[in-house]
Image (cartoon, rainbow, N blue to C red; front, side, top):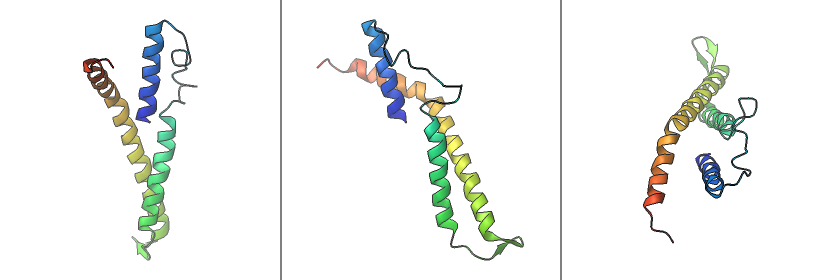
Length: 113
């Protein structure tokens, strides 16, 4: 997802420097205020993490606190998957400007090819 966001940004920079209005500069930032390049991250990562947690914890049998363990394991995997994904997306969003600036400074310091 970070590469996708970086390539979009670089495309916008190139179009701006050439004075063009193209697919990168005219691209909607968010569709309906929700859909962006981070949306797949919020769907795929929690599903994947929850699935792996479920597989890892599926071998547990019996009861926890007098309740069957299977629904509790499923619920725990789902909650942990969603929480882990939300944290990852928030960290990506907050640290993206600093990473982008660092990358631009490195690119500017490179000799032209």
